[in-house]
Image (tube, rainbow, N blue to C red):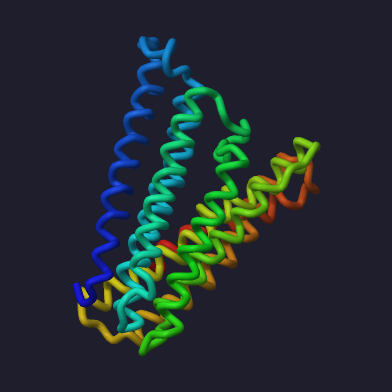
Length: 267
């Protein structure tokens, strides 16, 4: 550990592991329910377990990404984190929102939209939390001694993830439009910007662990970014067809979805 403020990352990593374990627990609850061993149904119905399970996936991943950024960005920028105090405030507020959401699901306090069940009041708190995080990271890069490709891709991956969360907050009376824009969040997170974040993290690890020339790794990072956007954005079309969009989206979405593994192969 090069800088003292990097230790904040450990809290995020520990929280991510805890949330992942909780996701597994709710997965087992659903699994046993599916085979008829549904003894917890009175307290945890299947739809509640499913909402908790699917939403925890996003929460523990984002928590881990934040922890990675708080470790990688100071090292890449060659300076302490801009505001460790702000990072701790952001961590505890994120945990408070997450715990409130999980408890709320048990009382069926949700929007009822698959993968995006979090209530609207908590949505705004998530937005405020992520903006705080991005501001802290941006200021660290801005005031740092170096501005590397790895740090830039990581930041813009996190920024894009935040921007793509916003379409999921738009309310539509039409279920078709609601489903159409919901995939902007779900698909373009999983098969778009998360690959940018993963590519940047992998780039950092390879440079640090192998000592390979940074220029070689970061050239590959550009290739991965290109493949991710080419396949991920157009690959969203395999969802569009089933929301009543034109028939050609089934072809476009199918072809480019088949290209998505190329980004992982590049990694």
